[in-house]
Amino acid sequence: MRFDELGLDEKILEAISYMGYEKASEIQELTIPAILAGKDILACAQTGTGKTAAFMLPILDHLSIEENHDLSTLIIVPTRELAIQINQQIQGFSYFLNINSVTVYGGRDGSDWDAESKALTKGTNIIVATPGKLISHLNLGYVKFDKIKHLVLDEADRMLDIGFYDDILRILSYVPDDRQTLMFSATMPQKIRDLAAKILKNPVEFSTAISKPAEGVLQAAYVVYENQKIPVISSLITNKPDLDSILVFSSTKRKVLDIVKSLKKAGNSVEGISSDLEQKEREDVLMRFRSRRTRILVATDVLSRGIDIKDINLIINFDVPGSAEDYVHRVGRTARADKTGIAISLINEHDMDKFDRIEKLIEQEVLKIPVPSELGDGPVYKVRPPRKGGRSQGKRKFSSGGRPQRGNSNPA
Image (cartoon, rainbow, N blue to C red; front, side, top):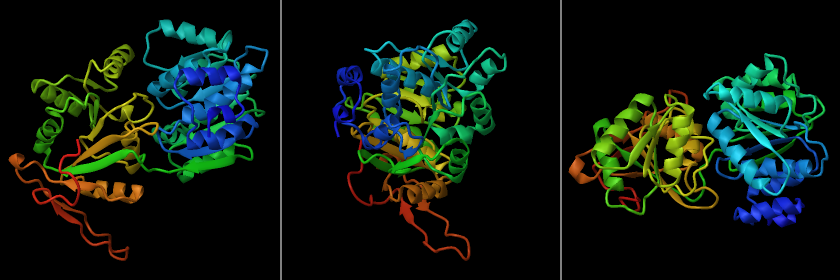
């Protein structure tokens, strides 16, 4: 369905056109009419499917026909990166409208506090905020949310994983009961349904492709020993100029530093990003990566959600993520908006059971590729059988020194 078939304001359609969008994604096509009709929404869709536009376009449509300029929309998100991304998209979608938005999040210097306070009390239509920083303002008593009409919880599952459940309920105690509430989540565990039951009124539910990577992602894995990981990455990216945007995920900040050091020593254009950096430093690193001045970005899971960088060619999971859902979010950084991309995971002998859980979640066995012969043999891929009494699946063995199961031995 085209956006001009959804009944949106002409000025919004003009902005969408300038941004290069014509056809609505599945989640947008499903939710926009219901949000325009004023319904509460509980929506589940994988990352990279256009959830921000799904809730922002109909909200902007409502605001475009209202005469007042009060603070009427509150969007709560788990991370500062997601807050920044959503605010950038709001500015694009509302380019031809007299609508303003402000972000509220931690990690900035004190000068931002005054700007946030002013926005919360005197002058903006939309606030995009992380829970902790917003509560810091609420604690001082000057924030008035009595005119909030639209409340959005984006990446709701991530917020609960981080531990924001009580903070969310406290923020909602400041918001009028007579409001439209929209919950968007990439997964739908029971705790999300429990929260939805508390805060939504007769919601309409939508779900698309729960917890599965986009179809355009070519997934593969190398079974390696830890000391083979950097050489495998080098074999993937050396003499591959078409791979000009590579994102490497690591499990710890310490490893980020080690990976950056090793890849830089080999002559690669690489930078690292983690929560150790100040916000301005993080934004500068991301800007260089977006503009292709930095070819390789190494990051912890702080970036697996809430970052919108177009045309990332290759995602590398240096470590298998601890959560199967986090794998989906990492991989979702490539092949966004119907594009294609490659996602490679490096599985050591300690991470095989974790990767097996990932394959069960995505209902797909990921191609295992042998380590390049010059690096020696890797470990045998072997998953422990289920506990006694469970459903037997047997052992899956794959020696990374043997022949690949199928396909090209180097998808990158």
